[in-house]
Amino acid sequence: MAQDRFQSHDYYLMDELLTEEHKLIRSSVRDWVKKEVSPVVEEACQKATFPKQWIKGLAEIGGFGPYIPEEYGGGGLDQVSYGLIMQELERGDSGLRSTASVQSSLVMYPIYTYGSEEQRKKYLPKLASGEWMGCFGLTEPDHGSNPGGMLSNIKDKGDHFLLNGSKMWISNAPFADVAVVWAKDEQGIIRGMVLERGMKGFTTPETHGKWSLRASATGELVFDNVKVPKENIFPNVKGLKGPLGCLNSARYGIAWGAIGAALDCYDSALRYAKERVQFGKPIASFQLTQKKLAEMITEITKAQLLTWRLGVLKNENRATPAQISMAKRNNVNMALQVAREARQIHGGMGITGEYPIMRHMMNLESVITYEGTHDIHLLITGMDVTGINAFE
Ligand SMILES: Cc1cc2nc3c(=O)[nH]c(=O)nc-3n(C[C@H](O)[C@H](O)[C@H](O)COP(=O)(O)OP(=O)(O)OC[C@H]3O[C@@H](n4cnc5c(N)ncnc54)[C@H](O)[C@@H]3O)c2cc1C
Image (cartoon, rainbow, N blue to C red; front, side, top):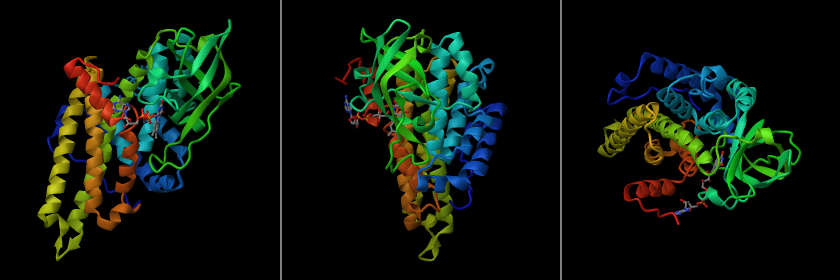
């Protein structure tokens, strides 16, 4: 990628709603992304590799478990801080944000919320420091939008459980040291557990050939008679509400993250439109270009307001899962539309790695699908406002 000239945009003076601490956190993550991510992200995506050196940097900027209490190695920060960190990371790349989201919301959050004190002490500090990386196994080959139908299962063998089954599309799987896995017990109740790399019968083959999230490693989790010690099962949750609670936290982060990707596309398109001359004038002087830019900043501003309010509600423990669904759905779709319009403004240059646009656009095709698809979130809103379930 050419030099990272990103400048953020704050059309409705949203910064006035943030504390000095929020702004400090945001600028330190932004600086790190400019220095350590932007120079290498394009090549990482072209080569489809996750730059492992990012792990140390992510830990240092507080990217792992920002809202987990400090006594367990987390940042002890509020939800708006968490959102701002996700926004700045995704401004760099959705794959980078995915790695941090999974570690924080899908691995550290369930261990903190559903785990025993021993599990918290054993795993959280190492996950916060990046010494251990985690992944989250919910989706299966035949159960994506309908995770409640999962086939992975555990059988009680006295002093341990025997786990069988498989998971698909698992972010961080190829290099994860631990995996939070969801499987049904003999009564058909979903249980959560922590698996460790090296357990006999547990493998994590990598998924190749993605055109999206290429700087994030994705893989399968395969369980072939894995002996899971009973102390690795989460004692404090049973049923689908376990994984759904984690998804709530991750989806909230994605709602913020998508704004970062949209801001990067808008910022690049605005600068390009002012610099690129056709027919003797900057293309920014044509009405059709202005329409695109005006609509982009309008949609970004609406998403910023929606998300900030959601952050306040989340800090007060009042954000509902349906409100989070609405923000995830709206903001990711908004970012994808902004990326597509920004691509048009960049003309042919928009498809190259000189600019971040095409990379964001392709990444967002995954973001609009994972953690609940665009249509599934619409059905969640529909169910919330009508009281009628249209899923089945
Ligand atoms: C890059 C990437 C990373 C991922 N990382 C993880 C991870 O770390 N952990 C994890 O567990 N999962 C992960 N996922 C999986 C992701 O959450 C699923 O892909 C997603 O939930 C959709 O499931 P599916 O792909 O099986 O699609 P399906 O569920 O088969 O859906 C296909 C289509 O049918 C539609 N559809 C389904 N049901 C309905 C309905 N009732 N009404 C209307 N339309 C419906 C969907 O909206 C979609 O358009 C990841 C996926 C990707 C692509």
